[in-house]
Image (cartoon, rainbow, N blue to C red; front, side):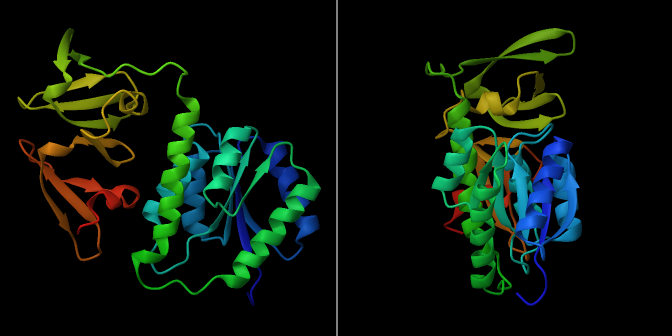
Length: 274
């Protein structure tokens, strides 16, 4: 690269973020750290604003994990620009190993060790030298999306309890001041909404659950319920049609629901026949 490489650091502990930045300055003086973020949402916004070459993302941050932030960023990233190289920072070996095993550029364990970070710097410099100009196509994002899907799956498996979770048969949902028992067989669509999950059923009803969507999906049959967005899960057999717009983005309609639902880049592989 003729111009200096740029980076963004996302780390919720300010002292650790400063330590990482100082070590990078020593090991790679030409690297420009454009900004630091203390949470996943800010990391996504700053990355879209600055378009850095490299992202150092802490795995665990408030609001959004580093993995979730990276997945959201991939959804919003412009197709004409190469996606940043990802380095995950973690105090938890199982996440770091998962990242390494699916070919993340590298991972850094806390506390940061200068000798280990030096290896990361060499890998990043080599990767940047070998990087090809991004084509005007979504194809350059495919390896990144594949990597993030594997990472998200690995992190979900790592946090599952040892005992197998029992499949949900009924959902206990709020309808006004009443509690309604909703058979899972009647569910068409689940959508995350703030602290709740909106559940749309075959009879046209909409009810609210307090259980997080991530927790619900672990207890639903993945062959029956497909995640099509970070905050959206649908019954696969209820999909009526899938369309692709001029920019290549997918959306679908469900039988019995008038609303068109967006399919994120991360889950577009479910409809690869298109």
